Length: 280
Image (cartoon, rainbow, N blue to C red; front, side, top):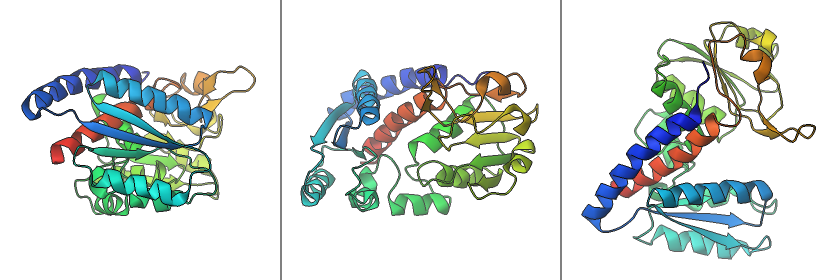
């Protein structure tokens, strides 16, 4: 079965829009999301434009605040501080990557935990670690929601996560542990990754390496979640970590690229914005 993230995201979007309309009538204020972007990275331009489009379709007041590539560090800090104390701002998103002269972590941690729509602040990540309710990172939560909306069992399942980034792999592994799954985390130093992937009930790959997951690495009862998104320079098509054409013939469930995890990430960002709005 193809796990259609586009379809699930659309269903969640319809439900979300209705909830937002009721809350706006009650509170006389739209949820507000501010997106900060430094420079003009082409991929970021595309992602941000899509986020703003979806937000405005949902009656979320979304605004892009642009900074030149060579913006002074103090100026970016100052804008974050200003938004932190603005009562009419619910969520703040710092679009990554930042130029190399910036330490991304410094600016992510400058965002107030109560407006941290991406769930990257140490306080929100600490709450995640200890199993408390919090704002969860968008891609991991989107993956969990996709699996649960397709009624794919997590409790007691063997889940292998490939890739241990702070944005996807690590928080996702913790969230799966909190859902009572048994989680194996693999990185580039893991010896014999195939040993871990072959035994997985659920395999999640988030490396950004084209076709790192091949047919011989999976079993026929496996659910495969492909987080990677890479431009194939030969065909100019978007592909993922997984050799979809061959793996899809063998496994039980699989996400496509594009149209799998990506739409779930964007709708989860909107759900997080609403959550922050309601928290206030």
